[in-house]
Image 1 (tube, rainbow, N blue to C red):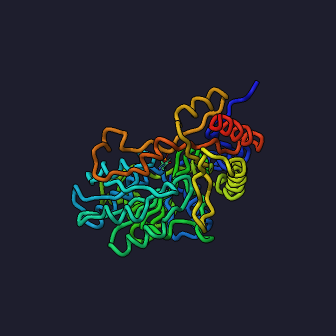
Image 2: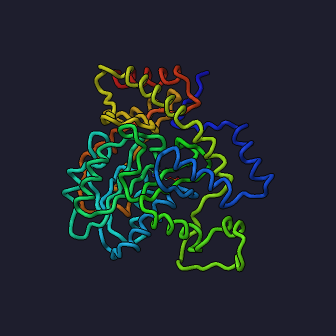
Image 3: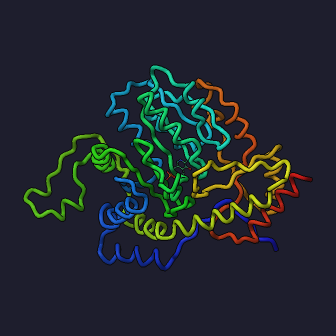
Length: 378
Ligand SMILES: *Cc1c(COP(=O)(O)O)cnc(C)c1O
């Protein structure tokens, strides 16, 4: 009996997670505050970023990023945001939520935004660029950040895949106005659903904390811990959202963070095994890593001809890879937008993400690699 090998499978240190959660239950504090404060501090000290605010998802963070920058800079409806079509739709939906105009730029060999294409797509109405570190890669993030600085554009980094990624030995995030990480169950810091929003600017960080709790200007925790009169009173200066994270998710994230570097090391070893297996093979193109990038290796991606047939053949052998991603231009709300993206379109039809998770063994990696080579070489 061959066991199925799935693309992702969350792995939890059950006893450690339960111990963290037990503290919440014993203390009677499962919501905002307590563990959410702890994980924010730990995330800042791990990444070296100045500010971090714990969220109920990265999707919430990406929406909030768009909303707050629009508010703060006074963007008008219909103003443009340059973005990649090769991503999860939660990168791009916020542009539509905020009545802005997505403009797709093409990707490069790293499957991340190509700065040359971004430069071409900038118009007088462009306000921001959203960069996605696909699979944990930094791509040409630095060039895109330089371009944004030159042109006076805001930069949002969708770092959903990038927990633990370093560029020249520094964690990512410093390049962007706002960086958003995901701690969804299948991402590199696994919880159930949560995320982190990191603002470069202290004032924006302060506003973010109000907006993630319905626009209320003080959180419960600090109200109940400040010994002053009228602490039951609070102001509501903005129509905010319920986007903050809770202590149960934070408890899970704390354990995930403890093992993040170790786990990413395992992923990088698996990636190396895949690379070794495909070296010198024709018909399997490994997506390269840019120099200086120590990737979280959320994904290991290759491109092949006849991708869909190859996927079906892998499935017949109980191997279930994924596709990251179908071009968002395939979906009705992103069709017919300005900007042809031939490289992204080709990738959309050719990429495969091979199984990559901590429940796999090296033998599983070999089994996947051997199967793919057999199928592709016929
Ligand atoms: C998973 C993911 C998100 C959204 O993360 P959630 O925490 O599930 O909301 C955003 N962007 C990309 C590229 C993702 O893969």
